[in-house]
Length: 449
Image (cartoon, rainbow, N blue to C red; front, top):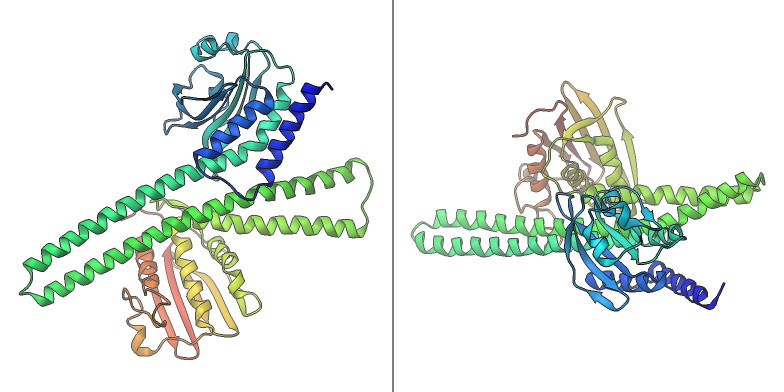
């Protein structure tokens, strides 16, 4: 290996170490610019870029593009009859030479004088194609597949950053929309105050309705922020988790290939690693489900799976303090609905049950089929609700918590979601003994009203 090849290898190893090991991530466009500059230098490429896919999946726009001289202006181009068309949403694709001859309709390749090409598809946390990572060379590259393997190391990180960029843009748009709505509502309130000075009762009703709308807007902003946070955290955890799983698989394959049976201690260590990966994967799956944000009510929703996801997320508040008992029906519990909203329902109800138990206690979760409905009963051994407050429990802003500990919107929003699913919500409680929440949801699908 001559000095130039050794220097290139050192650059590649340095780049891998910086990207994989760095604990301080620079989010935003600066990440894309830095990574393509370093990749272009490390691989000795003539052009390197990261591109984002449009909604129609037929055009790509570069986010950051460089050559050996520096950063270039971004541009858009159609994917048809280009090598990128074979990469987007599919698998890595490389051409060691004569790529311009293979794609004669791609004028960009001809104008740039490209001879070799390697491209890696980028996906978001839900495995939806979002973009591409590409290196291009003016001369043939006969070890192009080793470059392809190097680019694969950065594909997951680049996909995550691309998703972060879109999510933060979405959040910024939502915040602006919320601010506009609050200003609009405030203007309406001022106008109504002038018009209804002599009608105090009607004015009070209008103020209450406006306050409720404003608090629900704040709640929507919190849920949007939480969705972005959980999606980002889940995706970032996946990166080191994949390294752990890769190491486990490599060790397991090594022992199997060498016919060298590991001793009991090594088997125990391998089992522990695999168990930990499975546990972390379940937590990530729960976070991804909770961060779903769609308007569809036609998703297949497994009630048992939703409850288990919520218990995993709330495990830190349950462990060593509360015994969770389950009496599940053996029949399937799939209903049509909205996965993200139903996760919010059960997370809120279970969290209320946990908070109602001050020291140690018990939560019993029961499911059964009743006619064309699934009935879910969640009973806790907490401090209960008095008879006079039981009738107010679903009122917006009603809460038994101390000031500053809750808005009183949780069960009101939960009830609204259950009504959207054509279901019902009931309560049974005895003060200082128990509270039972009874949810009934229809099994059969029909058009959402």
